[in-house]
Length: 537
Image 1 (tube, rainbow, N blue to C red):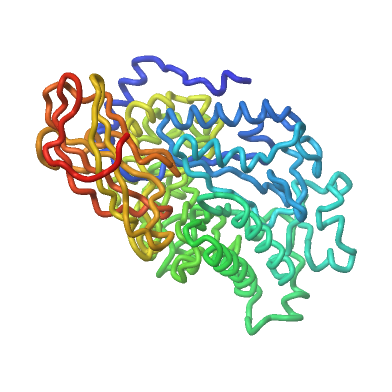
Image 2 (tube, rainbow, N blue to C red):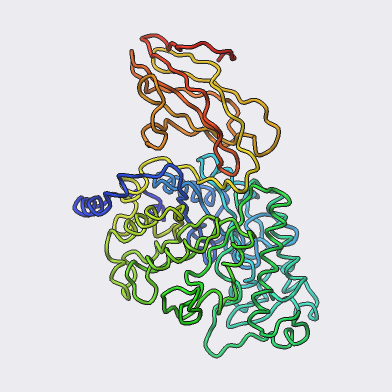
């Protein structure tokens, strides 16, 4: 089992091919870029490796996953904390997940809060934690007898169940048309936002269920009873989902405005033959607008979501749904919100219907395409386990080619009313082996102005250089750093350096840069060219 969590090495001839195919990715590495991975818990796809493991084993596996992802350059994880009407955290309203303990409603033993643990583990590695939720899936099968007594499919009276749920195929779903269901789901989100230090709430592509042969949604009576002014059931269904998305958005922003809300829809919104004016030049068998009743474009137009991460799970040049065509389409329909491309890591060397996935440079080419489009802010990979297995050397490619540099999360400037307070370097010291800096920030009057972390830049010589060059960035401080102090052990004796510090808030918006400080590293200490007031180390 644990061999999945090792960093694998790959044959040199494959690495040479990868390096040669991605020179442009090496030449211009972004300083701010989403580099995320989905960690799926449903069916124990990614974590934990099996239900019912001890608490220590669960934590050890999660830490191991994060360590490998961090080494691969990832700066965010999207962990599925609500796979099917259940929870990976203690809740009075939602039962514990069977994928955690083996039995729905049963707490981990010895007891711990997995969500709180995962957030701390991610933040301690300077990785953002986004709480991924499947809003409407109530069960993963039809075995209602195994549901916990607190699951509403068991706890509600039969008359209420008929309003809250419907069966479709081999699962039960929360009914998007029910105002009580919407309020329940919004309350679930509110509870998480209030109690946990998450960076985002994330919904996946499952809204109304994917269509199945010989199955019909049994909601025509509900539509006829209360059409709310809509003349077609399709528009009515889309409005049902709209109401949830709008309600979740307003709830999040009313509690913690910096918590981002995003969606990872099916990768095709509409085909051009369905919508010649707005559709993409694709021939997808389903679309999120027409089949899942998710009008994601409307949500971005209305500012209900902060980013979209469409599941672009096809290769470049795949005729029915070309990655290049879809990336371009989504980039033209974001309305100022962030776009993160969803990549199909699970298809690498594992998809015989499309030979492009057997090419070692497919992911490299996709990331390169993202970076050449200024309206794309990064990537998220589905899912973690394939990345850990290292098919076709994808780990090596990420470590050495795609993500060898540190990258912060791209800022969402429209969400932050003001930038964080400007830091000022107030003391410089040194030892035989290092230069030490301390800084402060004044006039912090709001949450937006409060620094969350800092970037320390160093330029050779006595002047400020190019901030966009990865080599000028020394380090980022941890999130919530208490001591605004940094020690640079790489300074050379008799060399002059110019140090600058920039602050970032919870929106990843940057401050104005500090006044530069020129330092000469001597044999025994460091000398600052200009004195300033401050405090002692």
